[in-house]
Image (cartoon, rainbow, N blue to C red; front, side, top):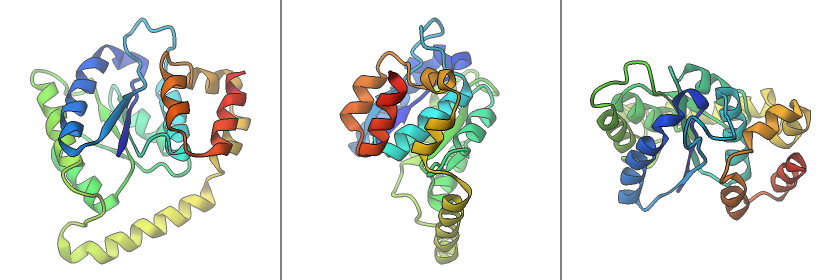
Length: 212
């Protein structure tokens, strides 16, 4: 699994700490973590939580990432922004229990974390515990076990609904405000990471057009 970490501007100073905790857990599973930044509050490329959603949509729809970890001060804005895009199923995660149940019941591909609200002493430990439970086992296993079949059925229904209620990501990129969309892919390491891992030619071409 390839996991992308995205931080918006208000919580960029925590990027290295979040990356460290996520990488420790990912390493135990043999997963790869790509850090798309922001890497610090003074980065030239400043990401809002809306642009985190755009970037999550690009990465997941292109196959450049299999899972996205993002957030903001409360996690709410990032969650809403991510869920605005097709093929992104983002959960708002506040605890290890949230993480486990989201993985097993909802089988999503993105989480939004509150990096400021209730984030104090021991915050890095809470993050590690969240990541441990999130990636404890393959998603979609169900909980409780007697609910596995209806939960998996509902997940498939939701996926089909989203195909109808969302436009495809290539079309969306062509209609977004160009400066807003360009800002989402302006990160220092975006091109290095994205073009090495993108698996969708149409998305690659759309992003190259955006970067012109």
